[in-house]
Image 1 (cartoon, one colour):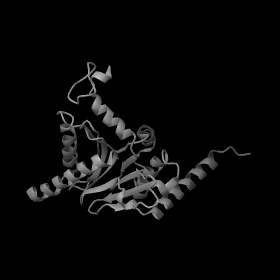
Image 2 (cartoon, rainbow, N blue to C red):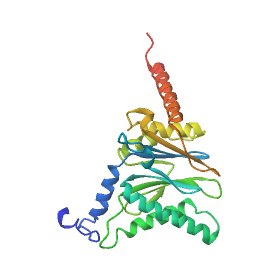
Image 3 (cartoon, one colour):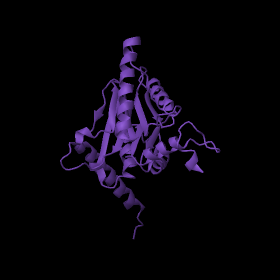
Image 4 (cartoon, rainbow, N blue to C red):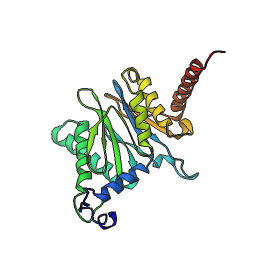
Length: 249
């Protein structure tokens, strides 16, 4: 049935599907995992870092990027598509500053990105953007924000979410473990994001990239030593928990 309806993006199938949009969502599922957690005064972005070729400069492989001083995003899906979306979002952020002399709100730039994606689902000669994005930042009131967009152009606000490879597994972990106590401190919020990524990243901290943002501060990428320190603490906590569970002989 799909063969006769998936050639044109503007044609609905009889059961209400736009197959090209659904195929774009499948492209997202094949991308590297990305997770974000919103704490009390911090937002954390984490991505699965794929191994690069021996002679390749890994600085050119970035899944976390800054849109403005108060907004950043991580993405899963086609990197080339993401580059176009990121550049347009950055221009909009600067245009907003010039026009109203205030930085964008996180919802404003999320809505802009979602509208851009939606336009590419409604006209011939184009295809949808094959990316989902986690957009985080702070508004003027100092409240942390986290939004997620998908290739269809919809967006929602979240407390914590995951996109990309095995996103369902990571999201289920977050649903079980996210609470006010876990995110009460900056360290707890960072650890929760790392624990969520470790559900799908098997090789520990060396394949994790992590960034944090606080109100009034620029995005900071954690160095590998900091990530390994947090991973070691998580492993110690797990060992202690297992010892407590083990029956006494």
